Image 1 (tube, rainbow, N blue to C red):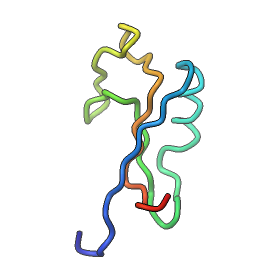
Image 2 (image 1 turned 90 degrees about the horizontal axis):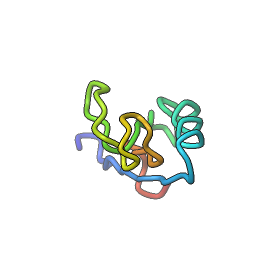
Image 3 (image 1 turned 180 degrees about the vertical axis):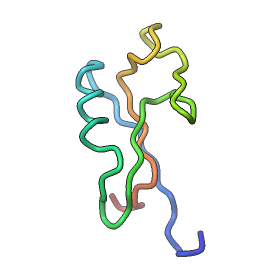
Amino acid sequence: MANGQSKGIAFVEYTNHADAAKALAASNGIDLHGRNIQVEYSGQKPGGENERAPSGKPGEANTVFCGNIGFHT
């Protein structure tokens, strides 16, 4: 990248969808170590369209994807 920072990613699995939803709501777009992190449900397509979650129901994933995090976060 031009600024010398890599775009790190992580996947965080929760025991249930409600906890994953709370984490997504509290974390998406916050500044973490000088980066605005992106948090969305794992398997969510860009633009917000959901694929089938592991539960078989759209939008009920227990795993969230975190993007644009620092390598040492």
